[in-house]
Image (cartoon, rainbow, N blue to C red; front, side):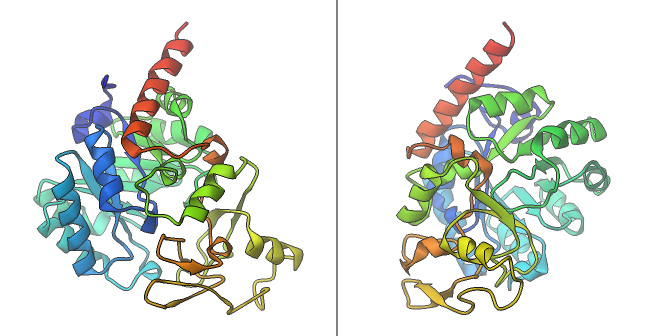
Length: 335
């Protein structure tokens, strides 16, 4: 595979400046390891895993790959039951040296991670946040635009956000996130000054992603206009904006004129996990393969780039395709 060198590939020893976003429960050892083997950065989301489960997925990923992978931790205490410091300790003990923080500051943990030769990433939503993060010794920034799927930090689109942050912290590598699903998007953010691209929605449509088949199909079928930005699915992580594909739950809520209380079907159990745990309609629960019931009524997290996501393929083949497309787009731009 050809290499594309940037400040990000140099910093993380990658072949290509592509990051598989830590898309919550959809991340798993198979996905992260396959991406890592392809020369990109694989990521594991560990926020909603306890210490034992975190150790297990890290160990399994290590067994699957000698490539580069890291972990993402949501720093917002409302998002989980396990303290951030516990996750940091567990991951350091397991040899993780790439840490990504979102929805909160990495500052309390940078010294600890750096003391173990680790690298710290933080998601930011503005030039000011970028400067503050760099002042706190964050090594690499993730500039997440409003187009992104899942939980969204920014109110600014990717196109204006990335150059603002690149200009604000010119000596720090910036990864662009939000609305990127092919090589043209990767080439575009590279020309804006980003050192890499962070793709989530596109990796949901891989064979390795741990998502329910109906959820994956909805991502593939979605148009760029089919996503909704709201705080609707707030049970378990309240008041955090997110982007989902419109489904029956969203349509009924809109028809009821967007109530914040006594929403249509409030409290309904629409699905169950494999152990029989009920999943309620407005719960922040990603549809994974072992769920049964009306899983399409759950939050179908996806970004506006779903309109560019049209087929399921192995994650390593996707990385190869993205790399080829990026080179082609850059060559076309230079003509």
